[in-house]
Amino acid sequence: HDEITFFPSVSRPDEDRNTAWTGAGGRINNLVLGYLADAKIPTEDTIVYACGHPGMIEDLREKLTDTGYAYTEERFWKDDD
Image (tube, rainbow, N blue to C red; front, side, top):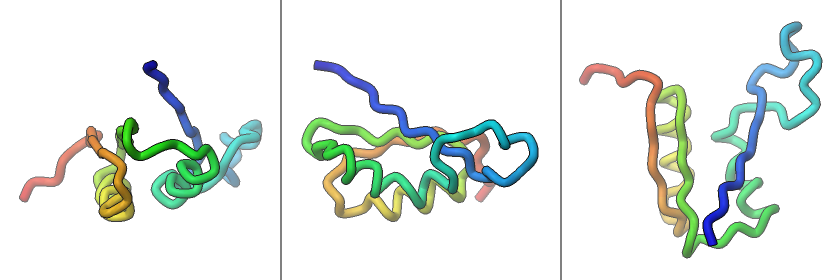
């Protein structure tokens, strides 16, 4: 069956505008491997979708290398090479 598991996080939980946030804090690229392990999400039928800042995406792609998870990305912008 098809299922989406969404793991939200506020990267700057200490900022005034985020004081009402009670969920996870920190950059998602530093949290995702723990989320995947804690939720026991299987590699064989999972695609990790990363969307956002190019630096975060590059770091996450590197962390997922050789983990068995399929990976796709969408950047908010792309640096010109």
